[in-house]
Structures are given as C-alpha cells and as structure tokens.
Picture 1: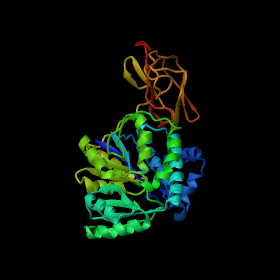
Picture 2: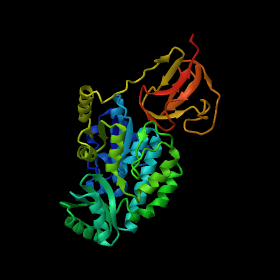
Picture 3: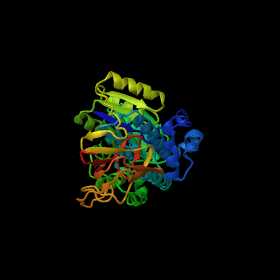
Picture 4: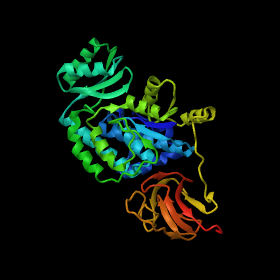
Length: 411
C-alpha cells in the first residue's frame, strides 16, 4: 500500500519554490494566490527567512509548496491508497484525498495560521524536541514540571516534542534528561502548538471550518488526533478543531498504516522530516521525500524497481469502460466545477450533496458538463450521468476522469 504524507510547519526554508519555478505545476501557486489573495510566488521565492518563519506565512508557504509537489506527482500518474499529514499537513492530506476542495483548503490554512499567530501572542509559549526518551518518560517529565507543559507530538520511537510556557518547557527538558533523554532541542516557533495554550485559536478556526464543505475522502485519511481512519466528512471539522490543542500522534499514525498494509511512503513537500520518521518507526518499509523536481526521477525509478509502488494509468478522451459506458475527462489542469443542472443517482445536483436523487440527467454530444478553471468541459458522448468522478472544488489534472456516462450500445 502506498501512502502520501505531507509535512507541517517548520519544514519551510527561504527560496524553497525556486526549483519549481519552470515546472508546469507552478501554476498551482498562481491558483493558490487567488484563493489566499496574496502574492505567494514572492513568499516562496524571495521572502527572507525571518518573514517565512512567522506562523501565518510558514503555514501558507508549506501548504502551497506541498500542493505543487502533489500536482507534479499526480502528473506522472501516481495515486495513493491513503494519506496523512503532520499537523498543518493534515489540511494538504484532505485536499489530496478529495475530502476538501483546493480553494477551501487554502482559505482554511490562511485562517488557521492567523488564528494560531494571535493565540501565540495572547498566550506565549515554545516547543522542544526530546530525543532518546520513551513516551511515558516524556509525559512524566511534563507532569513533574508542575507547570503549563504537555507532550505535543509523538513523532517516532525515542522522539517526542513537548510544548508550553518557556519556563515550564525548560524545566521539563531538564527533568527529561534525568529520565533518559539524550538531547533536548529547542524549536523556534511562536507558540505552544497542540496544547491548551492554543485554545484561543479554536473559535476562529471553527468559524472558518463552518464555512466550507467536506466530502467523503476518495482514499483513506488517518487523523492526527486519534490515529484512526475517518471517512465520514461530518467528523473532520471537529477533528481539525481538536487538533489545535491535542498532541499529534504521528508514531501511532504510522502504526495504523502498517496495520492496513503500508509498504511504501512518499513525503510530498519541503524537507524530508516525515520520511526520516518513517524510516525510524518502520524500517521495513520504503520511504522517499519529494521536495524538488529531480526527486521525481528517483520516484519513477523506485516505481519501476518495486512492485509495491503502483501508478494508475490516466484515461484519455473517449476511453471506454464497457461497451455501454464512457468517461468524460478534463481538458486541462485546474479547479473543477460540475454543471449544477446535472443529476446523478443518489448524489443530488452536485457531488457531495446528500439529497437522494434517483433520476439521471441526459446529455447530448457537446453538452456542458462542467468547467475546469475557465475552460468548458463538454461531453463527446450522448448518454446519462451515472456518477461524478471528481468533486466540486477539486483540483484536477488534464486527462483526469470527471463524469461517468451510461450510453446506448449503438453510440
């Protein structure tokens, strides 16, 4: 089983977009800039590290570059069986899985970054990594500090991150050394993420979450909060809200994937932290980080050399499923908007609605079935709509199937 993972805040670095500037997937930056109403190309190419490490900038830049890399990997035809993201990366994972539209994902990350930055100013805190210590001992160090400090990330065997007020984190770090920690490494962040000190950000994030639509994921997504697979879209707003003040259970997430049959893991985005944690936690699996275009060649080589890496071939215009079935595919890359007047059984007027609609809409050759960006999508076949194959707001690739049609055998 192939899993895509996406990094969180802290993986950003100045100029990290430069290698992708001439790649076709750079168009993702332009689309994200419109959604965020910001010049994200400047943030990825020219922003100094002092600006890039500000919470609201770090989160947005990391997400957008991860989406660029995801787009590039999708262009070579590789699709996962499951996804997960570390902290902020969970939003990218939801976009990758089809549970969250591209533009909605960008807007949520903007809202999350701004809310967390304000919470960090209202309740200042910091974080530190404890290396060479067991989970239980890290928890004990926090309890013995008798202050505002908690475990924030369970990253890998022997690697735990704590967070809280500066004084409490420093004391817990010293206590952790006495319990076996080999190193205590301060992390340069503007708040105590994934602890109760982030409570002030939850109201703002909940408001933003209420304004977007979550869909059923097309592939399994494992949540940070409980390391369980969640396929009910109504659960994700609560999970994302809870994530602000709850520890990231990344080691447990990898164990969940292992139980599902994980054989290969690809980290998409800046840096290579998650692939390193995977090697530490599950040394028997294959893991690879893709952060720049040349990494795609390594990924393709891995695909060719190992049967566990599966790439699904893209369908092309007019490709047949069965004698009486056809798919209409995207003419270009961009955000998909289905034609609102069309119905498919049990899906309502649009993908993701809950209306129980039994009727099928009939289409004729040349009828509009949707739009990708500003491009019309017109069907080359006549028939009836059976099922939507892409969700409203999903970013699709050229040649990606959008709608499944039932057509008479003689057409």
